[in-house]
Amino acid sequence: MASGLLFLLLLGIGGNMFCEAFGTNRVIICEHSTVQLTCAPGFVISIFSADYGRHDKTTCSAGRPPSQLQDTSCSTISDIVASNCNGENSCSVTASNEVFGDPCFGTFKYLDVIYRCHYWFFPRH
Image (cartoon, rainbow, N blue to C red):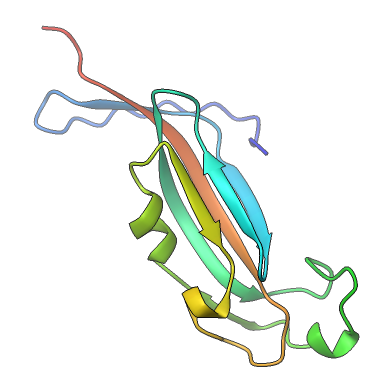
C-alpha cells in the first residue's frame, strides 16, 4: 500500500516537537465494509483525504449490476475519518451512507482514504 516514497518532515511546534512521516498509504473501502487503519507501534495516523462516492465504473464493482455503477461523478469529501482517526495508532473505518450520507442514491459507493503514519517524538535537550 505504501507508495515506496520515503518522506521526512520536521515540524517545529513550540520548538520541541518533531514529526517523521513515511510513505503515503491509500485504501479503498467498498460500501458496507469496514477496514482497520493501523500504524506500526509508536506511530499515529494522519488523514490527508477521505472521499465517499464513485468516480469510475470498475472500483468495487464485483457482483454489482451496471445500474449501480453508472453515476461516476458523485462523491462527498469528508472530515469524519480525520476527526476519528488523526493521532490514533489504529482506527476502524466503515464506508456507509449512515456515516457519510448518500451523495448518489442508487449507486454503489466506496470510500477512498489517503493517510500517513507519523512518528511523534520529543528531542532531548
